[in-house]
Image 1 (cartoon, rainbow, N blue to C red):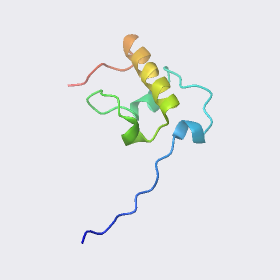
Image 2 (image 1 turned 90 degrees about the vertical axis):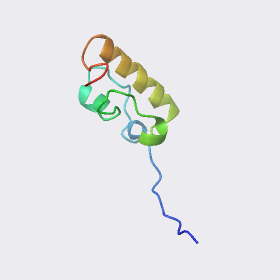
Image 3 (image 1 turned 90 degrees about the horizontal axis):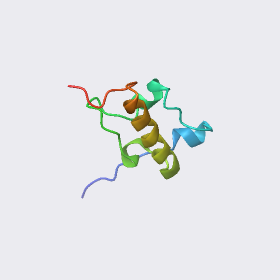
Image 4 (image 1 turned 120 degrees about the horizontal axis):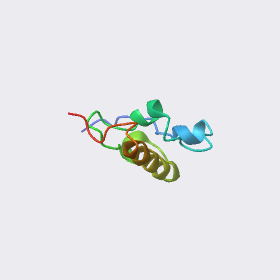
Length: 74
């Protein structure tokens, strides 16, 4: 019989810290929600809520379009 492992519930960092909005110019925060290849991480991986995940994706896409973060890294 397999043993059940306890996994801590993921929480939305933006809700917990009461961010008013996610800024596309804050590259340090945005890089935490991307892989090293440049893909946006899912809600399942990061634990963000649906509202903030949508804001996060638009912020990442805006930062990409004005070349603050690359589209992909090689």
